[in-house]
Image (cartoon, rainbow, N blue to C red):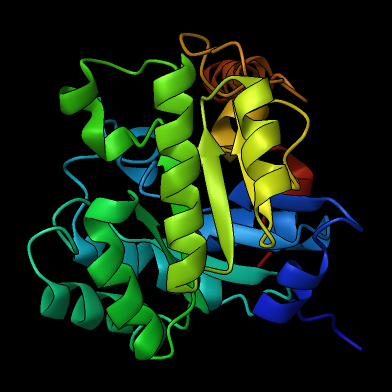
Length: 267
Ligand code: KIV
């Protein structure tokens, strides 16, 4: 029987089993990561960078995210599917936030949404949860705030900032989120927040003490030679593999080796 991962399954893993989350934005990749038995597929708004070529996530729209989510859910993955709420889909008002979150479940078949921010978006988080839409939080380096932060920098450095992060995490937990992404925060801070919460934390650049980890799939597959932040481990070097394969194809087309007899229809 095909496995299916629920929100409850993810919450129950806290303290027992580490949670594996990875991004996907298309059907082919979703099929592969699901076959690898990941727990959560995140349709991240990182799509705006790795798929669309932007230098931030700010240009991503609801329609882009619904489209990418549909591409993933059409494959009927067993993993839990969570979609990122893009910039300006929830910041301006609570009704906007609820309606946009609802689109991911109604039009695209996601099982929940992820929202960046703490207390400043708490009313939106509560309202979305009241509409029975599960919410994953996201604190630390929240990429939609890149300009407010003045760049992609490690967050929650220093006692005051670490305390603020913990307060925001607790407020989100009280609001009812089922899990929390901690991005680019010092490992001891992530440890303290993880220990303070009953819900699982999922780290990216947040050290080994989180309850789970997430990476952008293009980063961990080594598909971009120009992007290798400290927190990424490359489990493959697909840039080289793909370039070499395409070079071999190009050479064979040019010298007439491809297509060979076996690639031709006889009649
Ligand atoms: O957009 C994204 O892919 C994310 C993860 C890196 C957590 O938010």
